[in-house]
Image (tube, rainbow over all chains, first blue to last red; front, top):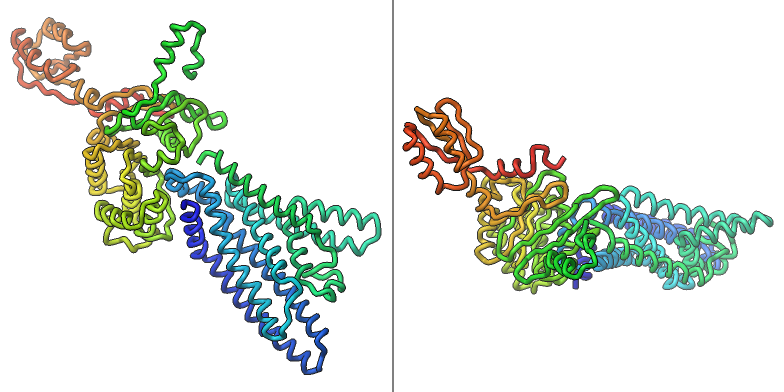
Length: 279
Length: 329
């Protein structure tokens, strides 16, 4: 019951924030531009009577570019809306009137987490669905594993959310923001090093790959995106190898399992820290 | 040092020490045994031992930094005690079920200011698991009580400080609590608001509720409280019935002529603190019952008594006397 009340409150609060409104407006503008651009590009290709293989390859390439933006927007929106949900309420004292009620502390953390999960899920569905849907509407093309791809993007957002909430149990809002974006940036850099490393000779290649794996272990967000990209890319797009939006090197399912465990451990740490700390 | 530190292996002594540790009793709303809180190297509360009887209005007084708010936070499990233990309404500290019967207004009351008054109270009623029908009736009554009924659809961010304090009071009473803890409830309130708080506290007392009042406004405490505790440097240094404190000692100023040194010396049987300046004698006596005797004595000593003026010691004077002018600094 309390979990539901707090989840509802969190969802309502996050929904009324200007950050979400801005992300929604920007997202819709992006979808509109993406759809229009894609429509004219495909029309142009059709003028030259390009075959289905070319059209599908271009569709997949642009779909990956579109979902890359969606993944980025979802990540940013997740962190910015959740970064002060605990730290802000602790520093302002708002949490005192909540925790002094017959509410268990874990209910506060889980309630808030679930509230954000609902919001993030809706946003991701709207945006990713918009990209995939507009491509399907124009060309009838669907990526290989759209469901799995979106699930991995969703896991990436949940991972960032969980770290943001964990940081909020013991850091100030600003420090928490630095922590989450720092880890996100580290994972991003590690992913690129790993991808670029594939073009080098040994031993640079192994070093780059190891660095990539190490950063993925520290923060598996980029690994989740690359796994999502793998599920969404057509074999032909993947065969191009290195691109900003997809990669021929992709993490194994073991890394995905690791990311899920990582997420669960972070949520557990957030629960434990919030349970133990003085408010 | 906690009471355990004094235990010597002598059964009769140990029994005595155990008896000194106040046991959980259902007649108490609050009981604490040597609660202590240390933040790093800073001792916020050194030794909080309190018994607050059910149905009384209890004032918790002390200078800034004395540990009052930390004490309140320990009672509500917002802060984990370093040592010691305590009971709320007969249950050990920290049980969420007990908090169902407690109302709390924090000192620096903050809230989700994007909610309107009605939504805010509904949220808190939901946290108490109140059925929606009952909560709506209670919310209507409370909004009327605190004078915010016309503002029920107004966002809290548009409220004045006084209005926020009133809505905070309403949320503290939502669950019809057995124990209500008010941390500086009159801060930010104008005289009308202060009177409202006073009336609410009286009303709660009439209903048999226990009120734990942490306030700097000693005049409010003087009017509303049955008992008070003084805390300094995190230690409860005195707990007493307010009646005994403020209705006990009197300062008496006597104006007269023909005052002989013998007559002044003879007043020592009523007071150890007698001062005579020309035609004015000042002394402190234990109660009003001494006054007729003093008057008769002075007349018998051939003193021409023109005026005999008793003056009660204010709580503020007592506060300074007990806590000291340095406060808690």
